[in-house]
Length: 260
Image (spheres, rainbow, N blue to C red):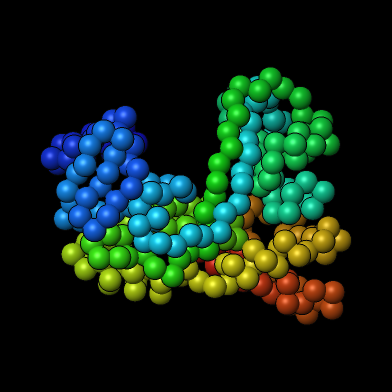
């Protein structure tokens, strides 16, 4: 972020610190300190976007809760836990040098239960909780205002990752900065907005632990980048949950291609 800020300033940009945007209208941006006239406004102001309120649309949210803890993992792998005992979506452990980031889609009480079941006990260094806006919006552009990233609810519904969609969207926005409607059209047609991602999320949430075991037995021990169609095609014919498996498999493959 510091590098981006330095480059922005080098190119003539101005960063206003401690100057929260409270609202905008057709002509002005109203901050906690001043009123600023604008020709073009790009709302990249996160999940609780003030700019999105001007667009007049809301989106779907999940809540993510996370601890950074003093703890050393035996293996240096990012771990995902999909059991419904812990979360309706997933939990994760991200190992670092001396600490781990451990989190869950859900509340801190669910995260505490997860840690207890895994017998992970360490000093909590920091706590984070955040809203994850996902699923996209019908309207991304209004007059000379456009939304992008979390402000535009662009997180991948299946993985709930927001970085890759934002990168793809930024390239499209930069190309169409003088034609925001073209930006909106291209974003809606881009694979990051494919409906299979939402269908995969809903199917994953409906999958129970027994079905989950069947689904992942064939890819157990493989790295995500090694997973191929041949590893999961048998799921399409399984009598228990054919359509759920199909949508999860399609969403997984799509996410691996276009960004988790």
